[in-house]
Amino acid sequence: MVEHEKVVKSIEKKMGFAPNIMKLVKELDPKSVEFYEFCDKVIQEDGALPAKFKLMLVMAMGAQRHCKECVSSAMKGAMKHGAKKEELIEAIRVIFVAGGAQAVAACREAIEELMK
Image 1: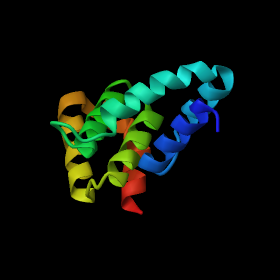
Image 2: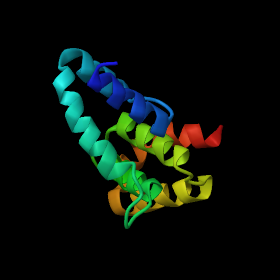
Image 3: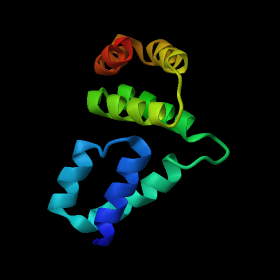
Image 4: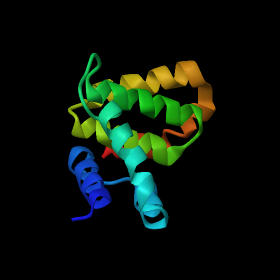
């Protein structure tokens, strides 16, 4: 297996899926997957902060940027790392307080996923 394929499979295993943008970038420029490997190590491995909290931070940052896919992907990753529904709801509440209605609008798909 080519090294960049291993990185994609590793991320897929940790998150339960590989973000669509990662698949597209891998097709366009396989060397860029090295950046994803770095991100994977920083975000998806427990350190001083558990991975689920790091992913909730990524979720909030995605909401601030009004990136619906970023919020949904980070939320799914946080769930895969053990985040409970109540923790995610509270994170969305904090996003609302800190980022306002537009940031919460970016959470719409993630909220719908939680309601299932």
